[in-house]
Image (cartoon, rainbow, N blue to C red; front, side):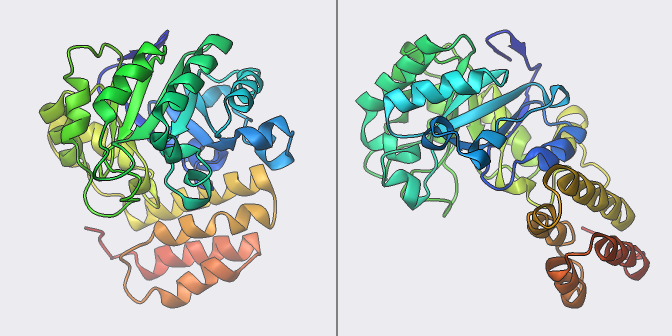
Length: 329
């Protein structure tokens, strides 16, 4: 699969852009486990053109993360074009446009999935961005606004005509948010539309190598994007790749391996964001790494309350000692 001049190989696996999740420390871990393409957190076009410190910091990327895209969202064409030009100066490999975020405060302003209510503006904005930047421009979107407007086949054609280099489709409508099951039939309809020639990347409910293999085989998609399934399980990229290559599940990580991974992730988060922010933003990850452990409440409370880096490392080490014989399923 190729996006512009970016060669991603066969059946590439993408880390979905997620606010407050896909920061540099998490991307570092996901790259370690074989993510083929990654994205920054969502970047607000308004925040970027106002030079908001927190927004601008999201543009910081390392060469070791490549290929990587910067994802932008906004509801005004001029602001999005200006933001794309600013983002381009950060030297990502591509610019991605978010037409899929269902969060109320974004969608009700007409940004993210809100653009599904105004397809002409979506196409106009996309075309303007494509014409303004030299990098490949891609789009991430959903099936439609609601059950009565699943118009993704038409939307995908029009965005392709506007010049995008690839499209990622989440198999839900905005009205569904993240409820119910993702519907991959329409993702397949886009991929198998004779008019489509750009890569089509599927997204939604991919949580195992078996599920990934099924979706690749059934719908013929070019790539697969993984989002929520990476929470506390960034090694899912290695699991899926192993299954795609061998047809067998990967040997589960041991408790000791997960502890070492959590330590590495925590150290990277503090290195990047300092104390206490780096610790605050690690809390969701630290507890998710150890889902399924019995009688874990006391240890979990330590992981989500302590602001002492040494105490956190000691707590993590204690998990190895306490659960050495426990096997994850």
